[in-house]
Image (cartoon, rainbow, N blue to C red):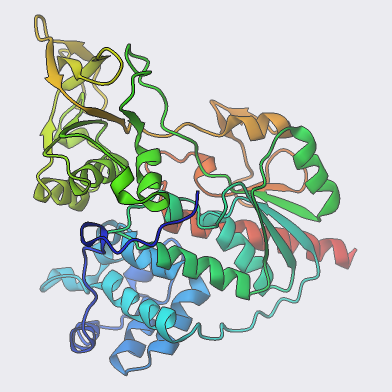
Length: 446
């Protein structure tokens, strides 16, 4: 499937860029703190006061250089980072007014780099000479590849899709991050000298072992898989979607070919559920309902995502669980029950749930979207023979090396609960790259 650069009005970016004057005024609000808490809150450690100061003085190229030196995916993170929980949440200006709009200022600098050329990044003091393979061209893989290439190593990336970017390219709706942004970042990594091999899939243990023999180190950054099944009757019916497949369809098919029907039910209450629900609205659905078996306090979606869905007209039904998808050949409705906490539950997020007696009802629907999380890629670790626990690969937390010598893991495949963000994956890739470089340097020294 080829990628679709959409110009459909409903799928254009919803957050407008700051004007030059707005950017300058916002940048001047920064206190340029020494030992700034916003830097400490950024997983990738971007020198935020420095890049904002460059914007205030009109040097956007220097600003972009500062950002990309720490985070090669700065354009993506400017758009989708949960800044209110990270850098902006730590801004000292919350004491006297409101936080500096760090994310939007970062976008100003990165949009300039996209329009006017990538700045030269600071040279690395390290001059490596290893050969490293990276499996997966998502955020963690791109970050590791870029960091290693900047250190002087020869890097080749193996990716099963036809283009790089992973979640940023295929799993984030266009009105949050246009496709051109993630493709720009893949191009940045390519310009650093990284080679890409697309359409490459791990078929068996031999594929990984061949990489181990061919390269000095291997980074596995395969992310996570599809949405797991609901394990209820009717999932086989036409009109049942995986939420990630739905988002990918909007980026790989003409939008007119993605038909949702008039009534759409989304099952789950995370950020992906919001993306699926708002996609359905933009694709023409009249009624979009999100079902969640717990309450608003327990949902995993960010607050701004939740508010965004409500502004789009999405309806939430709390304390509601599906028990069957009904229909003859295609979806006609969802049979549901009302849920409630059992007595003595510690909180709505952790409490054991019970079905309310006599609460069953059927919600009419033309389409059902599963959005209840993602499965782990256990197959690659089984093929590799790496140690796992509960479906999660075990790593050395300092070096990111797995139990298999010379094989490292980074990104969402590490399955950190509540921490599956692009910016965290970027930092994972950087740390794995540094550990590999130190390993190869020791080898040369001996």
